[in-house]
Image 1 (cartoon, rainbow, N blue to C red):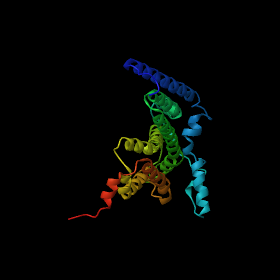
Image 2: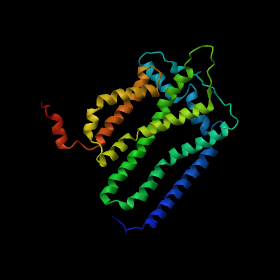
Image 3: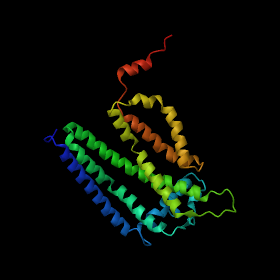
Image 4: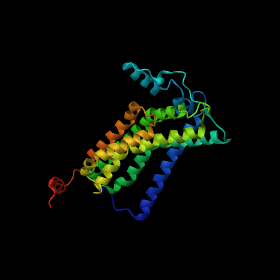
Length: 277
């Protein structure tokens, strides 16, 4: 270890300051986001509500992709718009607060990870510090990649399908503010957390709970499960949209397999031996 042995109370004091610094950073970002959330050019209109309009960047990407293949696409309709309404008196205020809070968590995530790293690093050896620090950096980057995929791909495609699906033309389709925000936050954070799968696999491998043979053995099962999961996330029934979600999830599976330890030699040998009677 790189420093003298610390007492229990020293660790507790370090933990207290780690929590206080993390909460202070979270509060500062939350206040700043709260201040810039409202208005015509505020974050809520330009970022949170961007997928409700036909000029959203993802819809334009899909329109251009369809044009390359000579296919007509609803994504090219710039007049597309989803009306969001509110029926609860305090919903807009609480949405303002909760959105600022969750966005603050996303933006302060690297600093929160740094604080965790600073707290645990004195207990590690030099070689452990190097590997763990790389894991923290990788995990942070993957979280942001997952959130970005959720925002630019998964949520807008899911929103567009569900908001335009009609069981009867006699029913007028409107989306409530609470419903919109629940799905917005859920899908984006689910994708962010799912992209932590390689990090979780690495940790479980370090603990000796899994190895690469597990991923090889259940690869076909994983493909089926990931296809079902992709279909649940994007229930449009469009194979192109399904693949947009499935391919990153499958690549996550293979990346997770890459980060775990290979199977022990004796386990490999046992799998190769023919069954005996």
